[in-house]
Image (tube, rainbow, N blue to C red; front, side, top):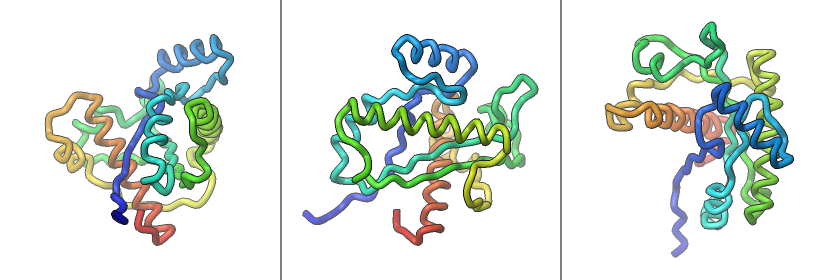
Length: 191
C-alpha cells in the first residue's frame, strides 16, 4: 500500500510500420468511415489503448506522445534505416528525430469513444508535424542532440536473433528510452 510501481509501457496505436500500400489501405478505411485521411500516419487502432488507459489510469502520471522523423531515405522513398541497415551497416550513425510531448493523464479522456476521438486528433497533429518535417527536415521547437545509443546493444538486450518485427520493436523501444532521457534531462523529472 502506498507503493507506486515505476514502469514504461510502449504502445503503437498504428499497429504496424507504415508503407505506401498500408497508407493507401488506411486512407480507404478512413474514407469508408468518415474519418480523416492522413498522408504520413496510419489510422490508429484505439481499443487496446482505451482498455489500457482504463486499467492503468490510477497508476500513471502521463502519456508520452512521441513522433519519429527520419531524414534519410532510399531512392525509392522508403525510410532509412531499414531493418537491414540496422543489422548490417555497422558504424553508421542514423539520425533519429523525436518530437516529444508529455500529456498529463488528467487531460486524457476516458471511455473508448472519447479516447478514439482524442487519439484521432493526436494523429491529425502528428500528420501535420510529419508534413512539416518532410519539408523542413526538423520538428518545431527546441533541439537537443544526444549521443547515439548502440543498436547492437538493443539487439542483444532483445535476445540476439529476432524477426524483423521484434528488431523494429527493440529499436523503437530504444527510441522511447532516448525520449525519456530527453524528458528527464529537460525537466529534471524522475519519469
